[in-house]
Amino acid sequence: MEKRRVWVVRCEYPNDGSADVIVNLPNELLKQLGLGLGDLLQIEFEQGVIILRPVAKSSGGVLSDRQQSRATASLTYRQRLRHLLHLPTETTDQQIHDLIELGFTSNNVRALIDLGVLNTDLQGRLSSGGHSTADESDYVFRIAHILSLAEIFFGDIEKAIRWLSKPKTQFAGKTPFQMLSTSPGTRRVEELLAQGTEGMTL
Image 1 (cartoon, rainbow, N blue to C red):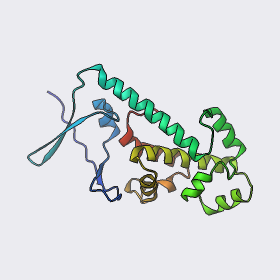
Image 2: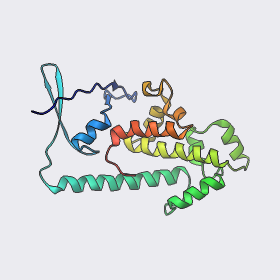
Image 3: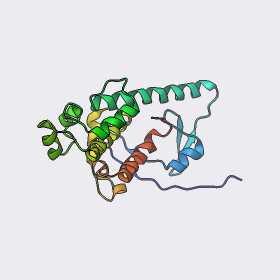
Image 4: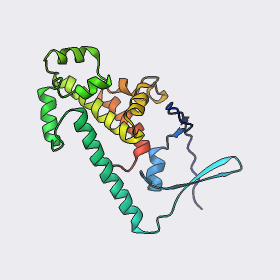
C-alpha cells in the first residue's frame, strides 16, 4: 500500500492585478514526482480536498519538449543577464568572473540604474566615473542574476521587480532584494524561485 504524505503549503497573491494565486510546492514533492517546468498536472477537487496528479508521459515527445524548454530558459537567462550588465552576448562565465574582480563601471550597470534597483550611493559613485569594488560587483551580479531568473519566471520585468520588492514571510518579512546582500540570502531567493522553475538548468 502506498504511504500517504501530507504537505502544508501557502497560497500567495502575486499582487500583479491578476486573480491568480501562487502555490509554492515543496522541492521534495517535485523531486519525488519527477516534476519540472512545463510538466502537466491534473487538478481534482473531491469532498473539499484538492488532488494533484502528474499527467502520464506517453511518449518521448514530452521529454524533448522539456529539454527544449530548458534550453530556451537557459538562453533567455544568459541574454537577460548580459543585457542587464551591458555585456556582449558571447561573454563567457570566466570573463564575467574577471570583470567582477576588476569592478563594474556605470556603463555595465546602466540598465540596473535605469530600473532603479541599485542603491543610490553606488549609483552616484559609478556615475561619477568610479569603479565598484569586487564585493560591490559581486552584489551587483547577484541582483542581475536574480532579476534575470525572476523575469523568466514572471515573464515580465515589472512583475519581477514588484515580486522582488515585496516582503516575504519566508524571509522573516524582508524583501527578496534585501536578501541579496549575502550569498546565503541569495540562495534562499533562488530556492523560492526554483519552486516555480524546478527543472530549468541555468
